[in-house]
Length: 396
Image 1 (tube, helix red, strand yellow):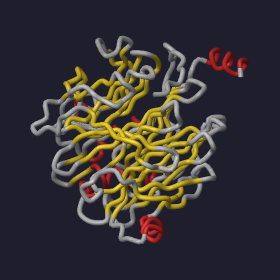
Image 2 (tube, rainbow, N blue to C red):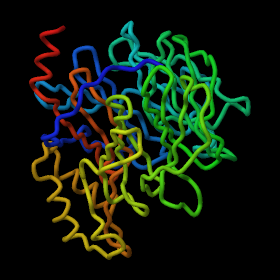
Image 3 (cartoon, rainbow, N blue to C red):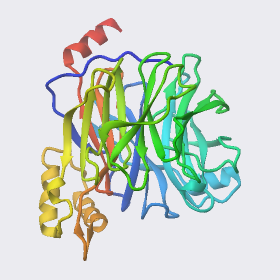
Image 4 (cartoon, helix red, strand yellow):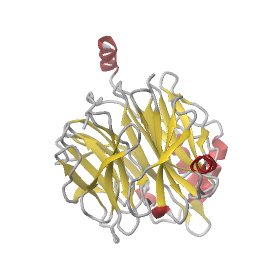
């Protein structure tokens, strides 16, 4: 496995906050992103009237760090586009994960369903030669012998020194488990490795420590859930993985993101309690997971958990979350979507922050996208130490 060098993160910095999405649709979810050659970011997420609806498409926007602004969001992949190119019915679209190849081509791995629910999904691959602005269908991955269905993506791919990539995937039919698909440049499956041997763990996040050492954290789907993430280790470049064990990280069976900053130095972004998705924090370890600390807290609404929260008070609390954030132009529409998505006549209102996706850019900055109250893709940005950035530029 190929390890990218990473500088230490600044001790004293504050996260900047803004929105990547424009409130064009009622629902947005499952954001991902990739760094472009000029240092900007291109993000993807699925958007529509509701999850699984026929109008769901993959939307995208580009972040310019020089101006600190996101471009207008646009739909870049539609259900009809894939259906026409593939020659088969597509019922709904889901998660999308990008990878930028060394030759400038970008690939997008998209969850597509022809029948049934997410357990009947397939992974399709699209290609772009204009850095993600337009896409053409390439193929459906041949990832499983059983009808070639029930394969989904959520977390970033890893790179191998030979140019192949390792795509973390998971399955939800019969058993729930994670795997790594090793793909060549033509999207042929060179091999696959199951992460652990459990049947109740999904959405693996793989963090690479060295060419041979890696760790995976997985969402716990046991019922009842004991409220902790699973973890597994590989010592041979991801071909074999230890049995799943419980990590010390509390989590309410929700998706996670993270980055490896160095050997044994990891950041994990997730819901940091055992019950609900009403908080979001980033934890840090510098000794390979032996000890963890909560490094940053982005949201915490535990005080309102289980309480009947009426909309006027909920609206005031949401307004508090917008203080200091770069707000979208159509803020009124966004707040209407939050009310429609998170407030119910009988149950009251509740908060939701989930599906974080993290990356560290070449200049050392940390970026995270996540779903904010089911209504927006929110972007958190932590700039690296400016002195170290200058030293990088001087050495380039």
